Length: 287
Ligand SMILES: NC(=O)c1ccc[n+]([C@@H]2O[C@H](COP(=O)([O-])OP(=O)(O)OC[C@H]3O[C@@H](n4cnc5c(N)ncnc54)[C@H](OP(=O)(O)O)[C@@H]3O)[C@@H](O)[C@H]2O)c1
Image 1 (cartoon, rainbow, N blue to C red):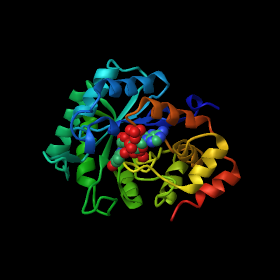
Image 2 (cartoon, rainbow, N blue to C red):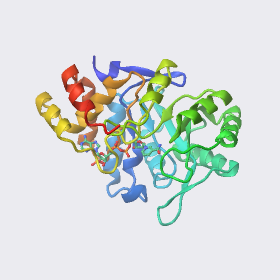
Image 3 (cartoon, rainbow, N blue to C red):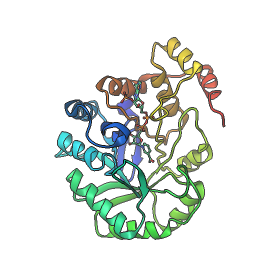
Image 4 (tube, rainbow, N blue to C red):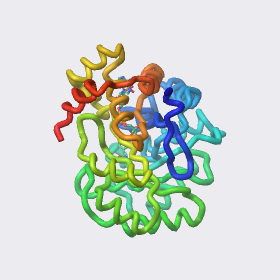
């Protein structure tokens, strides 16, 4: 089966399991414009031309710039394209990431995303939690979700998702409203969310790992190298193929600023990992 045929539901749409994460398109530290705008536009157009119909973004990438690139490259959007954004942070002039959780900030963030993407409604908005630590931490998201529910009632948002959250926050949020997807840090080496992924799979809810390749410092491992050599693939392709085979509700949004890497990432959908290869790769995780 080619990756075009591997789909999963996201909100009320079906998307290819291999999507694209747009964060790498902004300048260094996800701040400012890209060094080569034409190349960034080429990546976006190449993704959609190759069958990607799920793009992950945020207006705090750049800020604003990544969304403006998406609009420039792809607007008017194909009917089947699902754009997912996230809100809950803002950038200062030193490129720091600061929480932005008040009702006014969340509302402004949705309006900024709409304007910069050139949309009247955003398919999915993830509320990205940010408490004391970088990673998920317990704390109530009720007030913030109420704001998003009100924005959905106004027609500005179609579906609500969560990002950087604990399993308890997912359950608590589901008591308030339908949650369309969960986006947390997860990859072959960082598997703290194992139980959450399977819990969501049982409900038909997509789990969208961020940093699927390890993020700003891509994964390095002997096992990845060995399996890649045997399959005549690259280690990054094996890391993505492992995710695709791990659970059917995993939707991939690998990020790249390179047209070549984009095509390599999409080609990972054709790789088949044997049970022996999977057992070797499973040993990479420290959890
Ligand atoms: N919710 C959140 O808090 C959150 C946080 C982070 C990211 N995200 C989302 O998740 C998406 C994915 O995460 P990410 O982009 O940060 O990290 P990633 O997908 O794990 O990895 C991106 C890194 O891998 C490199 N890369 C990509 N394809 C490659 C290939 N085939 N061969 C070698 N290197 C390759 C990229 O460099 P090149 O540009 O040189 O290819 C970049 O340095 C983001 O784009 C963003 O949309 C969400």
